Length: 352
Image (cartoon, rainbow, N blue to C red; front, side, top):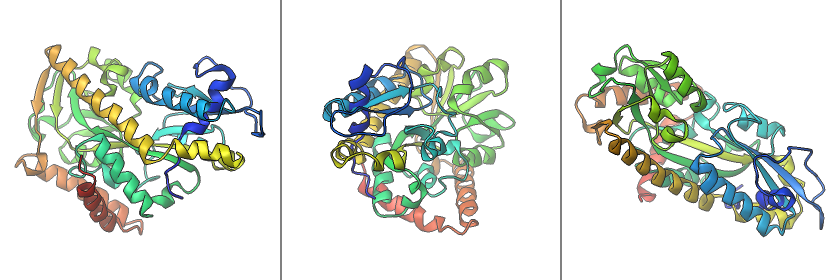
């Protein structure tokens, strides 16, 4: 199924009932979406309620769904992983524990192996370009099977990751040796390991306390969440090196979608897909730039390595980590090399 559908349907119903407040009761969602009935859709994600991805992208989407459905759809948003754990949200959506969910694919190792090839270094430069690549690959059927157990709403690029530490400048891979670095995905993990550092897997919501307690000494993260998760209170040294790119998925429970009448399905479809992904990824791109500017204004140490694949110090670990990931996926019987070539071709077509 192509992802051209708007996410609007969900939200229209949500707002009709009680608005898009995070304080709404979860309650039982009506399965009867006939004329005049209101269907409530519970939307779970791990970002904070005040995060601008929630306030500038997800909440407006929910309101659009409600408006387009004339109040017959209501989307209740549950941020901060209050309804499902960060790494279990996609499966919770598939099983119907939640109606709509947003998750980072990297939080579930091995669950989206072909999608995560798009996270490899050199594939994309911006969140918007990455979203375009993801949807091109989905529409071509290259990664479609990885989402067959839900109704896909959007595949989202979040921008290039960077390295952030409390006070340790990282200029070459040698500077990372022995450091415990938070990793968000298998792709980032392999590359971090190739530098001699120790990758530590955890969701974004655990990074603040882990830094405080010394469980990790640094993290790989895009810039956008640095302020949302208050990490700027703890870190002051940054290496802007595009060595991975995180991806998110928003999907809807398939049965919940299928039980909607055709006109409400159209509301969802008209508000989802590539256009929704482009809007959210644009918010990421703007937010990444703002967060970086704020760190510079704060006087943080900034080290720029804009082209690591052509840097004599960094090329080796990045290529080693990338090949490790591709070999790992190939070993499962999937054709990772073919998808990698398709991703590079889509990258050129999606240049922003």
